[in-house]
Length: 136
Image (cartoon, rainbow, N blue to C red):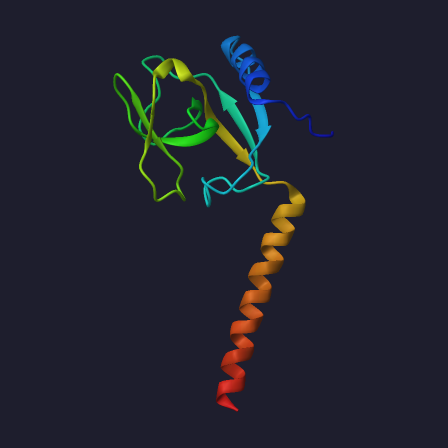
């Protein structure tokens, strides 16, 4: 299956319609703000928000001043405070109506899994080699 690229508004409308009917909406994450929970290229499934709104700790698809974001809910109330896991900056605030789904699953594509494993093995090999060279 190939990727379909949509502008923010079209993506929001489609996700809201699918999730609003109780379905799951899958998209490919782009960027590094949610690393290591969600990496660039991971497939993310979004489901409906629980009754009562998103809970702190959940990752949601939100419409912010800077565009659509997959961010973690830091606090919930009249407004939601959101932040990416890898983002040291201040949390963004959004109205609950600007959230249309919560992350219910993250799938790492097989090629990405293989590359991550190879990097880990290469790193372990380099560390072992450095230890061996120091002992010689």
